[in-house]
Image (cartoon, rainbow, N blue to C red; front, side):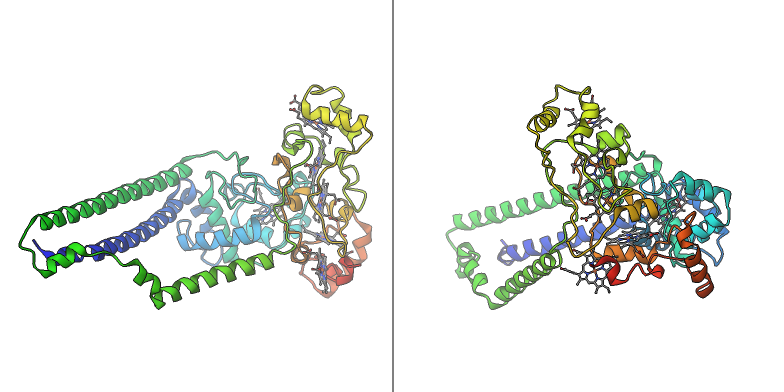
Length: 447
Ligand code: HEC
Ligand code: HEC
Ligand code: HEC
Ligand code: HEC
Ligand code: HEC
Ligand code: HEC
């Protein structure tokens, strides 16, 4: 009987646990590198990207270059994801397959200043611009290399199902088709998962076996008469929790972790004061934008009648619902609620979702009619929302950021003719953004 080994059982367990934690981390890393690799070799990725990228000026990274893809990923999420997804249309077109539609020599100037490309009369650009209701994509001060890495990222994601990072926060509605690339990625993920589960099971079995062996050995010891002092000590050995509890080092560590968590939570909640992004109240009637604006394609302005004409977008009164629901679904309990409101001559008490503080001035008609912005730019994929939620942050920074980047839609608008001329003579080349027209001055938005 080796009593030395027995004494070190707790240490052995600890060591095992530590090895396990280490192994798990290493595996997770292995998993993510495997993921990056599959991204690089995903079908279509190298095939689509390499020829297009090869013609890029300034030696662009190759399609399989994981670093370029990772850089492109970050740039895409920071700049483009609010309007674009790879495999589905959000505000702008799905960017998947872009290298097959357009050469990189077209994409570079487009991302830098799309309105210039449209103004140059480029047939593809003009058609696209008209197809997207003359909505202007903002200009981006990105380098050729940065744009190429975004394209490399997009190409690597082609055919993958919409991930959680896609702007379409409604998620469940992302109907992306799963093709080879997605399956390859998913199967690697599954493989790593299975490996992890097997490892955990093996470790648990190992730990249980060791404990059983340890106990068995103690039993053997107990059965013997000729025990010396050390053996007795081992038999009586108990782990002393109170020592751990009283240890100043342990208290210090626990106290510091607790304080840090509290501080973090505190800072987070202070930063979020007044932020209501994601707010999704339950409405008195289960009215679905997905059904009405999505599936039945009822125009937003059919119900929000003042959105192109006035400061506020109105919420439709019950008569607008009755245009249809005096005929459609008249027996539904939800529709009965509309009837009840009309009989009682009481408005339906919708819960307001978006609400700027009174100190700020925001005008819908200026943004929808004059600027030609799509509702979805600010309100997100409303046509996919079963229940409306606040998609954008509606902070001052959000307004200002867009005003800094967004070129003014000055086409066919005489008001801007002189201003554009003045701007162009002074700052040739720079886009005529909202802020160059004073759109970031305090008094424009504050009374
Ligand atoms: C505010 C919304 C918005 C943002 C942000 C945005 N885009 Fe766009 N993008 C559009 C719209 C809308 C179109 C369609 C053309 C038009 O109406 O001008 C478009 C078109 C495109 C096209 C042409 C697509 C095709 O199918 O031919 C490319 C390429 C593109 N965008 C790349 C980008 C990249 C790269 C970024 C990020 C650096 C970006 N866009 C950011 C709105 C946006
Ligand atoms: C059939 C009528 C109808 C159509 C069509 C419709 N809406 Fe609505 N909308 C409503 C009603 C009713 C509410 C209030 C209840 C709610 O919030 O769901 C509402 C609420 C909203 C809100 C939240 C308002 C708030 O309280 O802050 C937004 C934003 C919105 N709609 C945008 C849109 C957009 C964008 C479209 C087009 C894609 C659209 N709606 C189409 C009837 C409609
Ligand atoms: C332009 C026509 C139109 C207008 C206007 C309209 N709806 Fe609808 N609504 C429909 C259609 C079509 C359906 C789907 C009926 C079906 O599934 O058979 C529907 C379904 C519904 C349903 C689901 C009913 C159920 O039990 O399945 C509700 C609730 C509803 N509408 C509420 C409203 C409210 C509230 C308004 C006013 C803000 C409104 N609708 C305005 C066309 C309209
Ligand atoms: C430039 C961003 C932007 C665009 C584009 C935009 N909205 Fe809004 N919308 C807002 C903001 C900001 C509010 C909150 C306004 C407030 O509280 O005064 C809002 C509020 C609303 C409301 C609640 C009622 C109100 O006026 O406060 C509705 C309904 C609405 N929007 C519908 C639409 C529809 C429909 C479109 C497209 C035709 C649209 N919006 C386009 C930013 C936008
Ligand atoms: C997605 C881009 C976008 C967002 C977000 C946005 N705006 Fe704008 N805004 C524009 C554009 C484009 C114009 C220029 C319209 C025009 O041609 O007059 C504009 C113009 C304005 C003007 C008139 C400026 C002038 O020079 O007369 C005001 C005021 C304004 N916005 C307020 C706001 C406020 C407040 C918010 C945030 C709650 C906001 N905007 C968010 C794009 C945006
Ligand atoms: C494009 C529109 C816009 C411009 C330009 C703008 N603001 Fe704001 N500002 C807003 C909006 C919208 C809010 C409300 C945001 C919120 O509630 O988070 C706000 C909030 C504020 C607040 C916070 C008020 C509070 O109670 O939290 C202050 C202070 C402020 N603005 C000062 C300024 C100053 C100073 C300038 C000029 C340098 C300026 N703003 C320019 C749109 C604008």
